[in-house]
Amino acid sequence: MLSLKQSDLARRVGISASYLNLIEHNRRRIGGKLLLDIADVLAVEPQALTEGAEAALLGSLREAALAAKLSDEDAARAEAFAGRFPGWAEALAASQRRIAALERTVENLSDRMAHDPHLAASMHELLTTAAAVRSTAGILAGSEALEPEWQHRFHTNIDADSRRLADSAQSLVSYLEHDESAQSGGQSPQEEVETYLEAHRYHFQTLERGSGAGEIDTLLAPEEEQMTGAARFILRGVLEQMAQDAQVLALSALENAIKGTTPDPVALARSFNVPVAVVLRRLASLPALVAGLVVCDRSGTVIFRKSVDGFSVPRYDTCCPLWPLFASLCAPGSVLYERVGQLGRGQVQFDAYATADLAQAPDYNAPALSRAVMLLLPVPAGNTSLPARAVGATCRICPRDACAARREPSILTG
Amino acid sequence: MTKHVVLVEDETNIAEAIRFLLGREGWRVETLANGSNAADVIRAGMPDLVMLDVMLPGKTGFEVLAELRNDPACADLPVLMLTARGQARDRDQAMQAGVSRFMTKPFANEEMLAAVRDLTAGRVG
Image 1 (cartoon, rainbow over the protein chains, first blue to last red):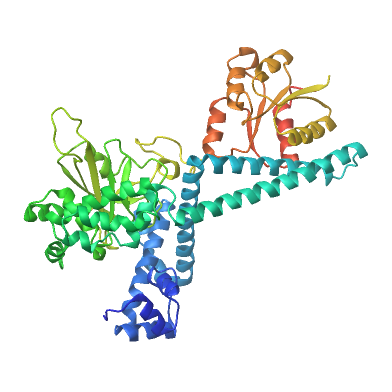
Image 2 (cartoon, each protein chain N blue to C red; image 1 turned 90 degrees about the vertical axis):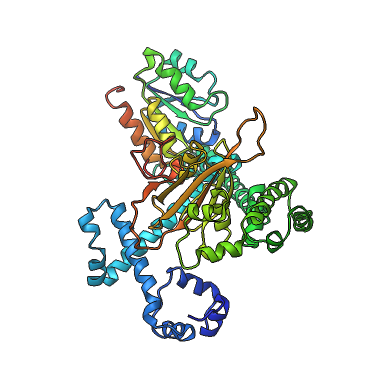
């Protein structure tokens, strides 16, 4: 297949890059001339391009079967079903994807509602005023005649409440808009750092070459005006870690070592004679792997995340304790390896590797500030070589009823 | 005998609408806008029904409800909770605290009146 930028391919077949992106992620089906054009530009057989869509369709059907608690025997008939009733299969798969998208929306909003007192108070004000309006309007619109005095009073009330409702709605919209624009520039320090790292694709050539301190100052200097002090503090820590890792394990060497194979972090750590945590962090910074990385400190607080599609790391809420990340805090020095998949998040599974190391130089009687690192490598669809453990994102939006780790009821099952 | 309801609701216009709707059905509606002395007033008046908001100044509706349920004389008193906090965990909390009915705002007047009739059927004439 030709090496071609997404934007170039889109231009050559006459569609927008964002539409091509939807096609690539199987959110839009293609066929006919567009399929042939893309295949032509990429110099591949058209069938090769539709295979991914079929796999996605079957994946969504399997997910629907799981949600409906179908027997294994019935679930295994997904392919036969899709073959016999392609239209119905597509409709069912589309519904399943829609449910997943809505669950993600609920997840985000509930996450925010729970930890954003202003948003929760605004919603309360809105609903309370709406209740007053609805009740009063119901009386005014009722069939029974009202005495003039009551009628006048309710008209006055509804007038005042309607204004209040409009003001509350306006203030909520302003708040959300302000919040959105502030966040795009990076509102919480963690988010500012994530935005910055994503913009650089978690890769800094100068850190790969140099020894650290000078390069980090150079990288941070232009951010003096752009970032808050707290964000620069966090970013400095991240960049220092990257520089240290680069010194002991060069990306080019790592790339060569994993070429054509599935990465084996323990084997790589042995081969390069570096700690496994270094290998996990370095693998996460290889763009070709599309891996996720989560780091937490000894309190279980997530202090770093590199997002990956299909695995949600709550921004404001506490995480699912079933993640190997947290298990590794209890077993410093061990390397945990488990296949995991988040419930209700499609059929994506990940090979999760987790280990804990110490965040500071050794000292006598100093508290051991363990820090756990978890690498998430997406498992190709259809690979069932290992059983997957079902984990969640956070209890509030986890649909699993019987879970020994549950901290609070789920709003999805209430 | 006139039916008696204590309505604890700090939102004046909601309280006024409810007072009107229930008044039309023959209820005597006693309104309170604060949670702090609500349980005392209810215990003293022993109404046929209590309608309780959750987010109240003074004490929350949950606290008022807990006080009532801790008093054997009020253990069976019908309590209808009206709240804009409609999440599953709020409903669970209300159920565990012994609420008789939980209704989220905004509500339809007919729905509220039906709940009042259900809760007091057989208790008031």
